[in-house]
Length: 353
Image 1 (cartoon, rainbow, N blue to C red):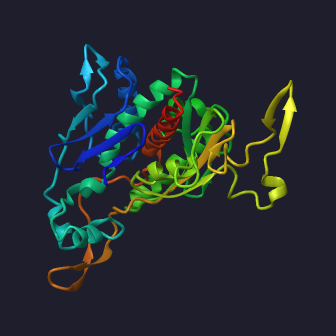
Image 2: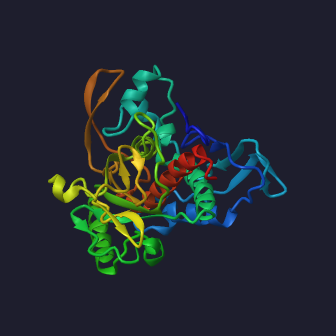
């Protein structure tokens, strides 16, 4: 299934090494000016050209609007973007049909699609598809900002190195290419990624995302809860292996975890945000705070055990090509954008946009 959303529907199409990839966004209000500069800014944050030790597949990420625009504004029809793939090098990828890469979708996709899946560069399972996700998310953020809602993510951890301070996390991506709020942690993370890169290995980490305070009551029990909506979108990002809300991994007693309710200046509010802005699947008026766990990239230069499917024999696989040793920095903006899409969908449900 390549379509998601209830009130705003997004559909992905294309493959990593095909002619291009695209996205259709249905449900946007007519007459909205398309924020091309914000979209380009988001794409620049994701682009490996701007992040040290990332893949040398340097796409320009130029896009074309195929439908849904009239005189620079949305016309109420599905808004369709197409992004061309220009830096494609598939000569080393054909072997993965018969010798699947460990950690990738090669083998399950081979079985599911009876050997017909295009697995060059990961095909539809590739992080390349997040270019289209960023476009949709930047449009969502544009609408949210008009309602006073902001979404910000930053690099919380790479390997065993954690951010020591989140002061200024709102603009962390402007401070350094890893989107780390404090400079000292950034230098340590950069050194670690360099070491891993030189070893021909890879490493994972964690991204945290925090929003502005949200209206109370967004979400629906059971299967339309705010957590399940967010999780569904966030787990669609290749490489995301876990998610938790608020301080769920840090506090173990209910007496500490509960956000107590108070009246201050005749206003009801919560005195903490350990639940991450959500109770019972509904937003509680606090900012949403969540963290996602990003796996080490599956593509590494070290020899790995695999099999030749056709010959039914064990083999050692040595990958060739262009790979990221760590995708955490590039995924920060994608996490932001997926959270923005989820919030926009729920706001449209209650006619807040």
